[in-house]
Amino acid sequence: MTQQLKFKGTALFDGQKILSGDKVLILSEDGTIMDIVSADLAGEGVQEEDGILSPGFVNTHCHLELSHMKGIIPEGTGLPAFLTQVMEKRGQQDDAAIKTAEEAMWESGISAVGDICNGTATLTSKQHSPIYYHSFVETMGFVPVAAQSRLDYSLSVLEQFRRLNGDMHSCSVVPHAPYSVSKALFSLLSVIPDNTPISIHNQETAAENQLYADKTGAFLDFYQHFGMDASAFVPTGGTSLPAWLPYFKHLPVILVHNTFSTKEDVVFTKQHAPDAYWCLCPQANLYIEKRLPDISLLRSEGCAITLGTDSLASNHQLSIWEEIQAIRGHYPEIPLEEILQWATLNGAKALGISARYGSFEKGKQPGVIVITDKGSRRIY
Image 1 (tube, rainbow, N blue to C red):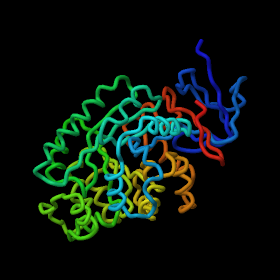
Image 2 (spheres, one colour):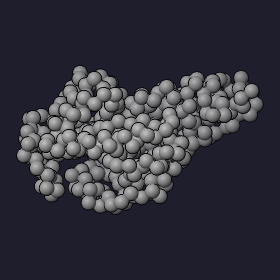
Image 3 (cartoon, one colour):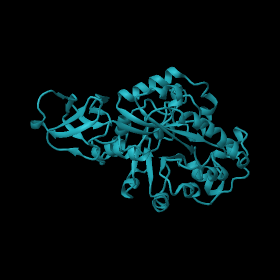
């Protein structure tokens, strides 16, 4: 008979709600959820924890490959200046920094990650990781004539990630951001078969919307600094989102950051991309732009929200619990139960892995964490 493991906390969040009363979580040795029962029916051998039991967190946006850049870029520079420093200072990969960051994510309770990749720096780490990864191989290129060559390079990187064995990894090739991807490249990306989900940095800075409105602002200086020819870009007279979203209207899309998204952007997305998820990385937004997205707007419009950590170049740690705490500090009216769902089940749905992760349902293996006033930690 398979040995049963039993855990009881001060409360239990099942992925959707915090259950009332004394509940015990029962799982098998391999972490498969078997049942949730009342404490008086659990029998002996219950391990008690002083905190809320929760499924493992899902981090839907991370840049693990930038783990060696912690503390290098000062806070509050604004996104164009931040990007300039990332491009100029990122240097060579650091396997030790990647391993340290990954171990910290695992121990803090992150079970699955949507990870942005511009190369193969994280390939070795992912081969033997207990974390589930979806590698978003990022492509960028603002000059239309270079679209095919830029995509070809990204597809060559994607092919290497596809060779990872087992059921703990998946991948897709995705656009970086509206200010770094030409219409030609968006068009090429849109017809790649079986390429899902899509992830994109969306409206992280006012300069992005300004570029699309009238082709002015800080990104013109950014292009000039790096010798990029922006002459082919034609402004649309509106915000950036309507210019690219229709390319992916039939696919699950994760919109990341959304710091300057408007109600009109949200309504447009609901109409044209019903499978869209809005990923919040609050601590990175505060680090770079000193501003948060309009979370009240996203909630009032019924948006599906997920959470991410961004990178150690733009954050002090890769902890979903710290992202939750940042949101609660600015939006204390949002119930913890709701934010926990963003951090678990919603994230799993966004990455297409909710059959295994995100909730305490029979047959799943989401991992088990405990949340206390001191933070979050994995217990299984």
